[in-house]
Length: 309
Ligand SMILES: C[S@@+](CC[C@H](N)C(=O)[O-])C[C@H]1O[C@@H](n2cnc3c(N)ncnc32)[C@H](O)[C@@H]1O
Image 1: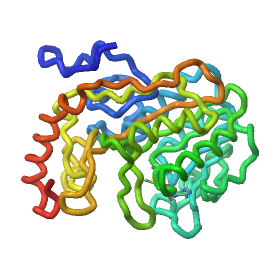
Image 2: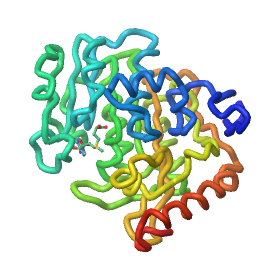
Image 3: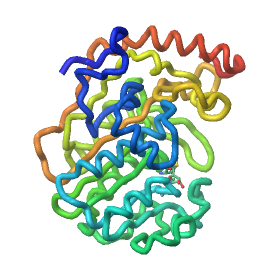
Image 4: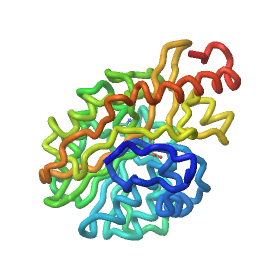
């Protein structure tokens, strides 16, 4: 399959470009009617933000599961707006996070069962995902959005994913979305209450070579040069300039020290279907350079020099 490219003559038609559960977030994805529908179902209007994309990828993955998932468990769920939509499709949904525990993020200051008391099949289980205490093999579907990258270094992330995989019943699937770095090694951004590890390609590879889990589709790490993939300092895009796209971003904890980041989703199973590989473009670095340059210019207009790169 060729690398998806921005087509100036027909910019809204992402072709050739099939939907995949295992890919980088790309501005192109926001032109997919099915993803737009999911974003609206969680109560938002699409605005080219990777966070919206994660919910949409999760919901599309569930919609396309080969068999209905009766039992589901999420790790680091906070109060994801997609929880009621999952609960509507399953017999039992268990959400876990550091609810009421030391180190919980603001997202986990409330419990989903206080937010949605009408969900009779929802169980909230306070749990540090580094110490999973749920029965092995008991769940048809395991998910984790934007959370495994907060447990420590690459070894810690791989370990959490391996243990989470043990929760899967035969034929079950695990959806993960996490932070990606375009660098050649993981990038750790320290923060409170916990830092963020941006996973590089080699760490992503470990998720299907060292966990006993396998990709259900090859993991596509190619990014189109769609202009809305322009990377801006992530905090500017998140806080001040919410109208600016945030499909790809610059994470920069210190002046000139940062990484180009994006969001990646992957679906794993205990069964090996022969899909354990990355799809990559050897010329990607060179192709993306104009976008990176534009991102630098845009950010210099939006942020103080301490956030320039
Ligand atoms: C960026 S937030 C994402 C929340 C939610 N998944 C979402 O997408 O809206 C990261 C979440 O991971 C949780 N978290 C961080 N470290 C954790 C750990 N060791 N065990 C369980 N949850 C953790 C935080 O409390 C927080 O709710």
